[in-house]
Image (cartoon, rainbow, N blue to C red; front, side):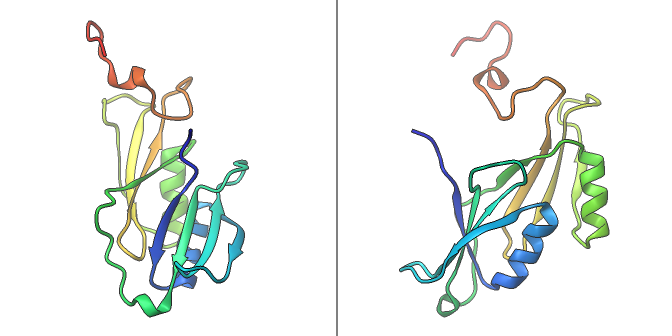
Length: 142
């Protein structure tokens, strides 16, 4: 089993597509009519799999993100990413280093519908995602 993607309900599809394009996402394809509304599948360059599905139904009205805390996106160079986003009009909170090191950084952006997105730059050599070892401290067992 594996998580395939996350579906986010969006109020204004064009506004959301512009925002996610600024983050680096590309449209992989669409499914125009479903019981949920139209679906737009997004992936990051170099990733063969869809990561986000933008769900748009104009009859739904205002989108209120509830229950979803945040989505996490890995970046290669936090400072360059934050600068690129700023140049595109996307404001980021941070960056900050959670452990005080020079190579582990996080920053936050908020999409047009209020979904929070955490940008993460892992230290060199870190796996491409969070692992059990990130949560286990020396002398602690799980």
